[in-house]
Length: 385
Image 1 (spheres, one colour):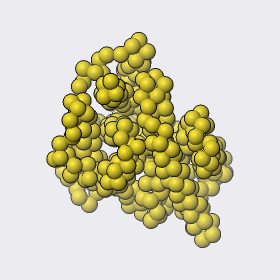
Image 2 (cartoon, one colour):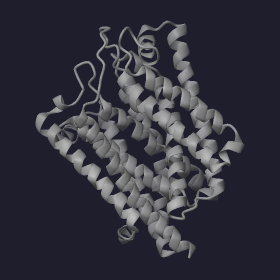
Image 3 (cartoon, one colour):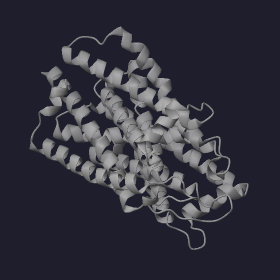
Image 4 (tube, rainbow, N blue to C red):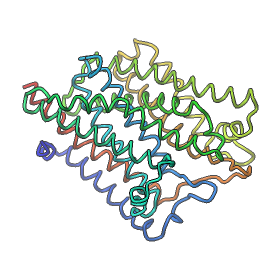
């Protein structure tokens, strides 16, 4: 089926070469970081995780979000998701691939990955994160490719793949739970020491992943005549709405516990994120913007009339996705280091090489997604004919 990705119009190839160009430039920045070391980044003793780990955390959520289609379609036989579920599985593959690339960039030297494999430490959450992420990548690659291949041949998918499908459902929950444990297992960082971090991560994942999928499916409808179906869009809108409500409910709980109980570790970080601390306020504007557009988008999604208007539905999904990206892909991780356990504040600013490498990883993810979606859309078009 790979040959289907080699056929496309001029716009398709222009997009492919654009992504390859961004990846190439980012590759040069990575070579610079590889030779110079992590001193090329904005990370420091106080802020040891920067934009790479922040983006990794967010993309784990996007990958886990695919289960919001797999579960209704395969467990509850919700047929409206028949065309779009494969897109969710392929989106998970691209997102996990990006997670692995971000981790590799954060390690500085890629050979250090071998330390996790050659010297496994089961008491480390990083070890379990490696297992669940690679396992989820394997499960989605097997399930997505075998099922699509069966559709391509016009035959039912083989029964042996069903156990892998069922296994991928709890596995999706596990990847973001283990990622949350990476944070709340660090007793020196009080902001992350909360039992609802994993549920909050999952809630935001189940909103962000489907919201991105809605936007991509709408784009495919315009450029590739791939129609996932109005019923699928509306049901995804309902899932996104409830997940977003749960996410903001959990965020409200964090505010209540921090300020009602006057917990210094939680309160000082929230102060820094939303009001600034002394002269340090580099995250205040993006965090306020994130909270505002997130609440507005969630309110919009509560009205069925808005969800039925494609433009407004796309706008609310885009706003919510951007809100969650800022909240978890920027504020949650970077804010957790401020102030440090000694009460000292060190702000983090990503360097040009970090931004270049980050953009290259996003471009690589978009390239993987483009190729997989091109194959899936072509197979669906052949089925329709």
